[in-house]
Length: 120
Length: 184
Image (cartoon, rainbow over all chains, first blue to last red):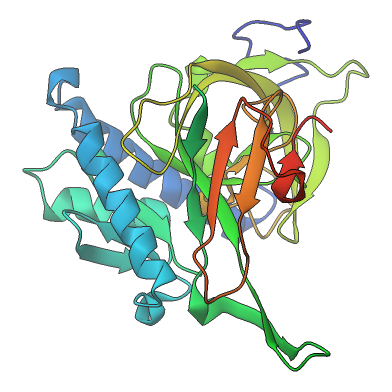
């Protein structure tokens, strides 16, 4: 592995480009930045000790792929599904928007408890 | 770790080719994907990734890595270029190289692989790119990551009628016909 690194320098080779040339793309990023900030604020209200159980999350990962492989997710082709306790809790074409929707809809659950999986 | 089972995705709704072999038997080619979940750095969230032996390294879409920017160690390019261009799933994207610590989880409720430093392409904001990567484009590639030095086994059969399994293992599989090695 290459060990010639600059540690923790986000400006290595210069700062990232800001998407200003394409208004549509700028809006795309701006929307996601807003959604992401809201999600982070929701997450910040939870402590690490309240973090969801990884075994429960694994069980939902197993379930969603058993459903996909059985052809049972046909209705959600092209979308992301949010899974909680082996049931589809929501769908959207955008993963981040779906995460946020789940966090808003189920404020008693940690936002990372939902398994978000693409179908198709 | 001796071996860790991976997530196999083979949605019968996404069969790409159905044909008939010379002996008359049906042949169906499905969108078979091998997946895992992983956590990055100090973060605890499990991200879904595709194991892609056609990808030179891991790829982190912007919408994924914005969650852990302070965990990335950036690698300046030797030619002083600001960004490089790559293609994934038909989409071009600009990236910078860096590394993060990753723990890879398999399909079952087993402990994850030990933490490993993964060198990856991190998608950058690009004012000219109308199709940024999505969360589902998180890739675990062939080199400089958890596949290196391990064997990726897919088998025993790929037909739709039979269950397909995949796993990542430290041990050389007995049957070389089902071997796809990340190190070959």
